[in-house]
Image (cartoon, rainbow, N blue to C red; front, side, top):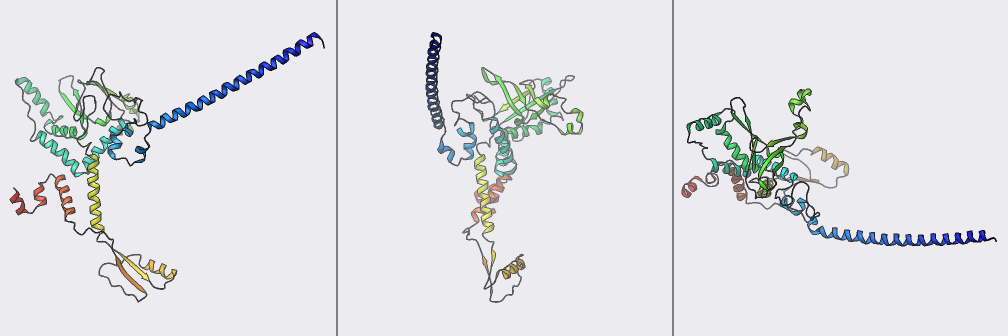
Length: 376
């Protein structure tokens, strides 16, 4: 073997040793990396599991928990994360919860007599017979009278609607339209559910700068005139209003670091619904306790006879009718075992609901005339 061949063989064996060493180092690094990743993933899963409360997820959440609990705001699983919709120091609910509360308050005011009475009584106590505006100067008084008596404003009637919506929604947005030629002012209300953003002073949250109204979408006029669709930017991007000069916001039932107001019915919604459901159940119990069904027993009848009788008695006999049968057929009336014999308290609860919803004197509805005279 020549010297060249010996040197080539030594270099070949040295290269094989280097490749084996490199492969061993890579295997060791991969093994340690996999172990580290597994330990890291287990640690992350452990930390995530600590943030989730299984007991809270397993229990039946009430309506209050869905609206005001930590699970509703997303902080039960993302406790150390700040939501994108707003700053964590603000006390407003998330937009989806706000819209749900807004719609449920409006629905309760339309369908629940107690909710309607609460809003109506608040308006009556606040305004009474109306509002009188007086100014010290005659010119100012004349301008106020022109605005107040303007048929486009109808302020003598509108003040009741303003107070009613303020109690119902917890906030109102008043928009002003100023005539550039004669200076007359016309005011209109904006539905609070259409305002999706309120931009305030960074150093003073109680000073709003502008309000954003979400896109209204396609209107009936756009459907009638296809040429109008998509011409205005506000139909797709919404519209910003300057606070003070264009739109003014009035709120109630809110804390200092909240931008949106809260309805007078917001905290009462679960209990209004529960009382209405309880009263509805009592009405159903009193209705079904007097109903019955006929149990017809056929002695020694085969399937064909049973099917024939089922078709024959598909309509129950009318009251006062006569039933003629032999000894193989036995009729018996079955009633549900609902022990609700005394329905006087249920009737009083129903009358109370009607009286409150109609704003009728409770004494005249709940007691006999002579008892009302004695109580008065």
